[in-house]
Length: 79
Image (cartoon, rainbow, N blue to C red; front, side):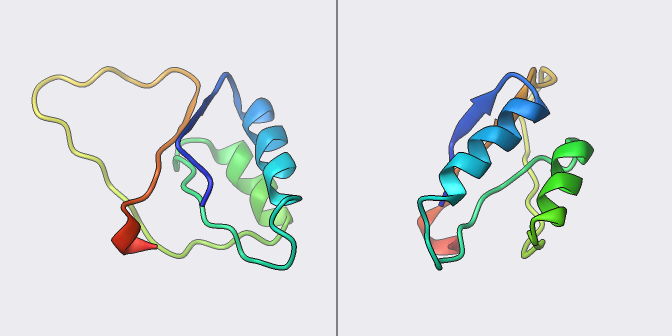
């Protein structure tokens, strides 16, 4: 699993994901990418990435919009 992580922009996020993918060999890595990062998602699709789940987040009260690319981690029981 990749994450948690925060990158400044989609280009940096893609470069870091690519660097991490090279360490997994034949295994299939699992990571969350925010749906709002469309350029990053399209680049990952070009590499063969697939959607396997839809994740939602909830916030009590007022939430601030994230700055940069935020890749959350997983709960172990969902992987």
